[in-house]
Image (cartoon, rainbow, N blue to C red; front, side):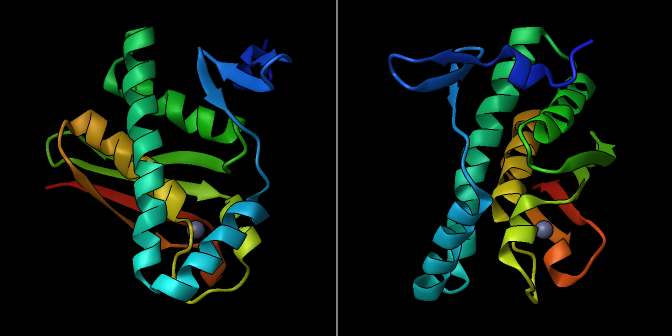
Length: 169
Ligand SMILES: [Zn+2]
């Protein structure tokens, strides 16, 4: 049995210095690098910075959900489970689906040990904008409409885990 299906399937191309999973390129990056960037952007853009990170995450989450759903011919539930598992396997924390209501277009996901919250340190609001964006991108691909994403609990605020609520419009 594979311990980490993603890492075990990564293809390393020494020539180009690239890591590929199912022909999509991935890169390993320290959370401090991302948070360093996030804090620098926050200094100049204030709250608007949050949405920039959210947008980046959204793009990745939307593309991945669409790609892997089609590639494996997954049902909605199967692609959600795949994304929850993949989140942990690429080191973004332990993802758990808390709620999925296709009719009401609501998705609720919790993440334990978010690397972004840890790297950020103490904050008075949610700081995991990348993950929030990825989850909203996943919701948008599933519900086939643009979703909003909120982080209603965050480890950086002292909550036990980060919780994301994604809603279709
Ligand atoms: Zn968080």
